Amino acid sequence: ETGVTQTPRHLVMGMTNKKSLKCEQHLGHNAMYWYKQSAKKPLELMFVYSLEERVENNSVPSRFSPECPNSSHLFLHLHTLQPEDSALYLCASSQAGTSGALDTGELFFGEGSRLTVL
Amino acid sequence: QKEVEQNSGPLSVPEGAIASLNCTYSDRGSQSFFWYRQYSGKSPELIMSIYSNGDKEDGRFTAQLNKASQYVSLLIRDSQPSDSATYLCAVKYGGSQGNLIFGKGTKLSVKP
Image (cartoon, rainbow over all chains, first blue to last red; front, top):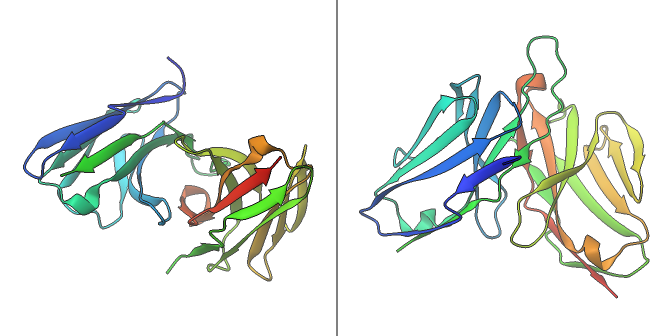
């Protein structure tokens, strides 16, 4: 396995279901991200984990719950979602700069999980 | 409010022509700028980064940055049908520990 892998690639769930999205990176990076991509809207940053600590939560509703057990794995737990949450959820990783180090800002994306909420 | 603006297109150019993609951003303090390409049904991939005013060339791609005008562009010379994709402009806010803010993207179509 190389790069950033996401599972499942497609998910259909009802509003009362609980499901999880999984992301795994094999690049040795120390930062991982969840982005939401909806039609005709820019990529929206949801969560950032750097060195396994959540460093950003962009006012995301509590029905989305991230988990980062280690620097290679990232989960997005979903419960009681709404139809407007239907979107492509992209995981990404990067090598975040430490103090004084150059951070290139390059994100490596997974192929995404296409979520449909009925 | 941190914003990155792009014309959503579609931008249609004939094969062999120069495609010009433009982007403006709101935060005058931004230091890092990126162009990502996203094929239909695929994830974004980085194709160019630029940090200083002026031009940066990489093969058929040239990124141009004008910080005074808060403007960044991407030129694709000798456009090929395989260049047909959505091009996302991204701006890094908040210094080296900041995060990328993306524009909506410009859809480019290169006609054979």
